[in-house]
Amino acid sequence: MRDDLEAALFADFPNLYWRHTLPMAETAMCWGICTGDGWEPLIRRLSIRLTKMTEGLGLDPSSDEFKSYMASQVKEKLGGLRFYMQRSTPEMRSAISEAATESMETCDVCGGKGEMSKTARGWLVTRCGRCAPAVESKGEGEQ
Image (tube, rainbow, N blue to C red; front, side, top):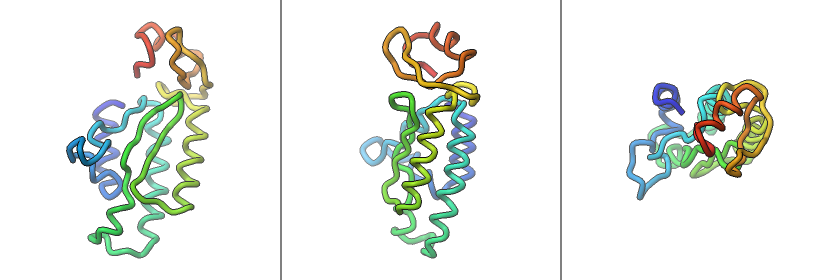
């Protein structure tokens, strides 16, 4: 994901992504949000939902328990969104599952309607017809 899109997500949802500045020994969020730009709206909608759910728990925002409801890794894997949290509720896991399902039909490059396909090098990706050839020419599953 482009740096500016990622920075906006981190700024807009500081309680969800607060670990992104920590070292690799403490979190996979140090690598940032490892998806294509096309999934930014999907991740933003999910972030809004997760933030509302966390705030709805009625916990003190400065407490360790509140801070444990945070993203631990956000990436693309096998053509779909993987969004991991340190701690979550069943409702949060359901929202994450819905976003993952939506990602399998959303081009990770442009955000348009996409479908799962395999690149010439064997990488699974979710792309629209317009973006698949352009990305394929870059090689492998590059964003």
